[in-house]
Amino acid sequence: MSQEQPKKELSAIKGTRDILPEEARIWQIAEAQAKEIFTLYGYRELRAPIIEPTELFEKGTGASSDIVTKEMYTFTDKGGRSITLRPEYTPSVVRAIIEHRLDLQPLPLRFYYIGPMFRYDKPQKGRYRQFHQIDIEVFGEKDPAVDAEIVEMAHRLLKKLGVENVLTLVNSVGCKKCRPAYGEALRKAAQAVKEKLCPDCQRKADINPLRIFDCKVETCREAASTFPKITDYLCPDCRQHFQKFLEYLDFYGINYQVEPTLVRGLDYYTKTAFEIVTENLGAQNAVCGGGRYDDMVREFGGPDLCGIGFAMGVERLLSVARIEKPRDSFVYFAYMGEEGKKQSLATARLWRSKGIECLVEFKDRGLKAHFSRANKIGADWVLIIGQDELSKGKFQLKNMLDSKQYEGTSEELAELILKQGQKT
Ligand code: HAM
Image (cartoon, rainbow, N blue to C red):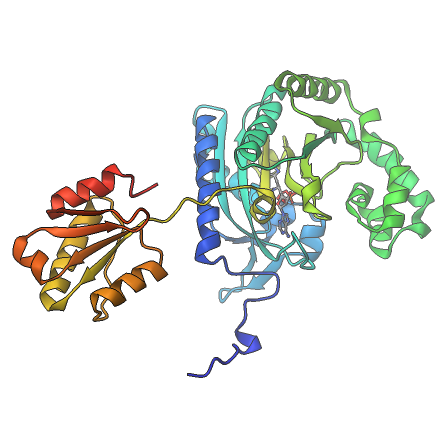
């Protein structure tokens, strides 16, 4: 058969990619570690749909954010509704809380979720159009100790996954009380340098100058570095919250840096905002971003329930993680004849129910060909079922790693494999 290259229109869509089995194994390990750690802190999984009404993000993520203005995958469904592939998870959790009255359960509520998100951004290293987030959210806890606890939890996961050279950038973006005065000062400063800004930021200078801080254009960054700092405008409540947050970070011994220009690209944050960056990532250096959003639930028509959370980008996380893939270990069945084949099927069926991975192939082979096949596909064990074995009711089992050979009944050999740690 000719090895034709797949036609271009049959490749994965730009900015998306396949995660093939070798790599998927690493993903499974990272996901399992995340779930284990989150469970230790009392988090439970909440799974929301991938598609949501468009207005959920317009209202939640924010009408002036880059995500909503430029990056959403939005379409009209057959019923004429505007649907969006979620660009982030936080508004979905808020919707689910309100829809299912989860606020009536004992507070605080702690949720986690791992899954795909979609943003129509320019693909580059560390930036995809379909990417994955590990997301956690807490509701109904005002104490700044929880702000520090989630940062500590993020650090625990990063450490567990072998991510090194991380720095946590922290800021407070104020609240409804202190933001107006700051917004005014910022607007003035932005208007004064408006002609130096990129066209997009000139628009932002009029609508929401805070978003200029998200711009990566050098001249805009330079201009933004001269703007007033939100930390100079915090109301006493926000100031105290920020100080306590830093105090708890010190208590946990977390290496952080206060970054007054860190406002994060989403409109909903109040008080705490943070990002964990690593120098090993290159330009897209944020592996984790999060913060407090004390008004979102109420603004969606729900109860007065404060929220805080973070999301880690799984692709970025795995590009800097050091995860050892355990050896896959399985038994290859080297059988002869139809009777040997049936005995293999029966034995494999029994052994699988004991938790032993078994591979019975259906191609007729001689013993030598069976062994070369077992070698090629990396079997740890080969079970030989030939005429001799069938008449004796005892089989030969070869450990391919140390070449030792054993004889025994199906029960005895299964026990031996399990004892020697067939599965990791
Ligand atoms: P975010 O900063 O937009 O926050 O995204 C969080 C993380 O997702 C980023 O730090 C990055 O690692 C990853 N990420 C974002 N966009 C991409 C992309 N295009 N390709 C690859 N990775 C990406 C949020 O999404 C908030 N919902 C976080 C949050 C939860 N805040 C409160 N609760």
